[in-house]
Amino acid sequence: MASDYVTDIGYLRNFHPDLAPSRLRLVAALNGLAPPPAEDFDYCELGCAYGDTAVVLAAANPGARFVGIDINPEHIALAERSARAGGLDNVRFHGAQPKSRMPEIVRACDVGAAILQDNPTFRTVYPNKVFDYMATERPTLLAIDGVARKLVCDDAQAGLFAKPENPRSIADVILAMADDPAACAAMGARGRQWVLANATRNSLAQRYLDILQGMVR
Image (cartoon, rainbow, N blue to C red; front, side):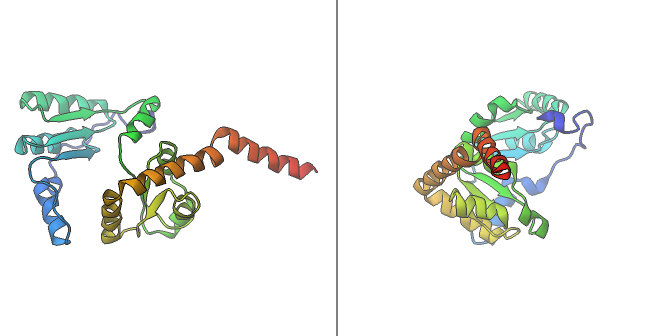
């Protein structure tokens, strides 16, 4: 996985105050949403670089649990050293993981999110991640219109659609999925059924063979 990215050049070190839980709570409240807990919560930063933000936030919020993820080994090594130097036991860092672990990692999530810009180009694409979500029986929060919406939400009935670049619509779908775990489980099961019927190597090969045989009849 890390081989697909540049990992031999370090990112700039920086602290991002906009990622602070206090600011996220404020944004939620200003938008009419129930703010997340102020003390006992789980926090994940994707692309944490050297971990400066995650380490500082972990030190400032000792009752919470923080996870930083980055594909650059240099970033992760320094982040772990910073956490040890600060005596922090509420922050962990993880680097790139082998593909063999992806099913386990995806299944650890309640919902998979696929979000793109509201751009006409994206109405013709299928993000690979939605097939991963469906294959592992996880429902999809899909903020992509077009063919992906038809496949995931209409054909497979394996997810819910939110308007791209519309925070209110995305928030409403998140709340709806959080409030109905039974519906999410049903969407996950339908997604896997669709993948097994339509997107495995055997099913794709059979469709290809059927097309070729139809051409020579």
